[in-house]
Image (cartoon, rainbow, N blue to C red; front, side):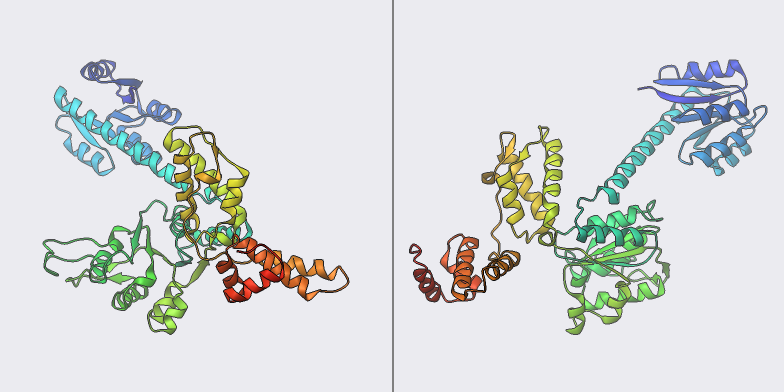
Length: 459
């Protein structure tokens, strides 16, 4: 596809010369003969490159440049100036022009200048597109789930996103802490800045300090040159400290000083550097309990726990499982280039019954495996490879329903209630006596005795 170029030059002969020199390039030219026309044309259309003379009637090239840069700072502008008027070209560069060419033109220089400008323009467009895709992906509206616990999380995250407040996300592994942190960042005033995640559990404590704060040449063996840390690299954006509960006490102390003073020094350096970042921390551990055990600094805990958000485990919002599963089916269908299968009722029942110790991350993995195994257009229970999980827990609601039933029959028959509980426990345990005994907090022989009293079959 040809690149659209706005060519601004008051001499028709000069416009013809420029177009002739660039005729071998895939360009579509739109011409303007003066500054006013150039501004009107620019406002009415979109371009990948502007080529403009500095001396123009009505509005000069510097005014055209200023208007373009105010509207689209990243759009490359090449200015044309007469030989001997280099000062004008230098001033244009300071005002944001990409480059300049002088009259009379050297064809190779003009072609090279245009090629570089178009390359920059296309890279900028790609970055814009990717950033828009990321922003759309991490929009709060695109986070799956409509259960009350998830709605509460989204409400809190949406409120704090509009501020620069430090956030602490707490929840089990796989509950979506990084997803929420990215949504907070991309819906904040810092969205134009970087989002840098640091996994504090994955980096040895001896290296984490250098990773966060950077180092100067000679700070330690192997430091052959200066290196920016994450606090510098994330300037103007957000630093996501994942698994902060695994950070060593020594690094915690240094992090606390940065959060309090908003300044830090590289390892081996003495020059203070401003810490212009927003901190979002996350943990799957109980930091309050760690504080009591002297495993986490209390002053750092209160510094990062300004706005806590607790992410519920998937077992606490099972109503979202069908929507999440369907979302992952669509995602992997696109990745695999195939029609999206449906999830059978029996398979969905299995998904809703599973304890999901790995939470949403585990559900995603299960659906990916099922998509590979399901050759037809239906995902069935045999396609679900569910990880071994802790013993199933008796459904409190199911037991609670027994009591009203018995009370409705003129009182409670204790033996009948006992029989119903034993029967329900066997059902939950899949007729496994050992599991059922653990659920009922009985010994295996005691449960066998009760089963024999019920005159059930021998297990």
